[in-house]
Amino acid sequence: MAASWLPLSSWGLGVLTIQAFSTKLKPPRSCVSGCEPVHGTQAAVLFTGLYLVALGVGGIKGSLPAHGAEQFDQDSPQGRKQRSTFFNYFVFSLASGALIAVTLVVWVEDNKGWQWGFGISTFAILLSIPVFLSGSMFYRNKIPSGSPLTTISKVLVAAILNTGGSRNLRNAVASMPTSSSPVTHREKGEVFNMAESTNDEQQSVDFPLSESLRFLNRAVLSRGAECSVQEVEEVKVVIKTLPVFACTIMISCCLAQLSTFSVHQASTMNTKLGSMKVPPASLPFFPVVFIMILAPVYDHIIIPCMRKMTKTEMGISHLQRIGIGLF
Image: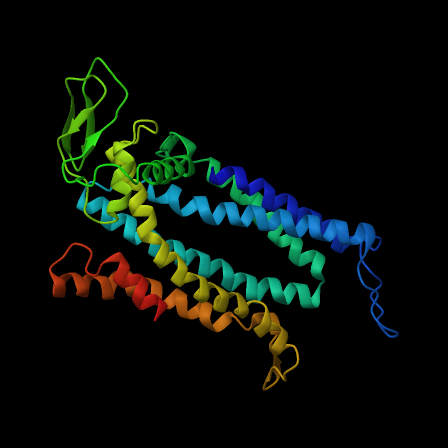
C-alpha cells in the first residue's frame, strides 16, 4: 500500500519541475507593473502537480507507519520495544529529511532556481521507490479482510435498530450464522468458544462483552446484522480513540502555521545574522534540529528511566505520551 502512493508524489513533483523549467507554463518574471496572476493552462498544471503531491504524501503518511509497525511481533515484549524504537527513529528520519529540505534544497532554490529544487525532490522520491521495493521479499504483510468502515457502520446500525431489545447484556446471546462447527474467537492467546444453542439460530457467548459503551452491545443481539462480539469490541476501540483524534486537530493546525504563515512573516523581516542572510523558508530549521536531538534522547534515556521508575514494560502509557506531547 505504501509503495502505491510513491508514484503519485513523483508525478506531482515531476509536473512542478517541468513547469518551473518551462517559461510557457509560468507567468513572466518581471513584476514591475504588477505581477500577472496564474490562469488557464498555467494554473491547471500548477494545481495538478500540487494535488498529486498532496495525495501521494497523504497516502504515504497514513500507510508507511502502519506498514513499519507490522514488521514487529506485538505479542512479545522485545517486539513491542522494537516497535516503539522504530516509531522514534521514524520521526528522527522525517526530521533529517526536513533538515535537508530547509537548508540545502532552499539554498538551491534561492540561488539556482525553483526548477533545481523541485528536481532534487523528484530525484529523491524516484530513488526511494526501488530502495523501498528492494525489501519486498523480507516484509511481513498483513492481508486486510473487509473494510473497517463497513464493520463500524454495521455495528452502529445494528445497535440503533436493536435499541428496544433486551437490556441484560452481561451474558449476551448473539445471533450468528449457523455453522456445522463452533465459532471461536482468539484473543491474547486464548480461544473462546461460541457454542450453538438449541434453536440453531442463537449461540451463547462464553465471554462477556465489556461494560464500556454498553449501548453498542445491543448490536450482538440483532438478528439481521449478525455482528460478532469481536466486531463490537473493535468498534468500541475506534470510538474511544476519537477524543484523542480531536485533541490532535488543534496541534496539527498550529504545526501547519510553521511551514506557511511563519515563513510568510519571515519574508517581511530582516533575516541577516551578521554577514549571513537566512532564507525565510529555512525558519523551521530550529524545531527540526530540536526533534532530531529529542528523538534519540527520548528513546535511549527518558523511556529506559521511566521503565525503571514505573516497573512497567512501556515506562509510560501511549495515552500519557500523547498527553505530554500535546502539552
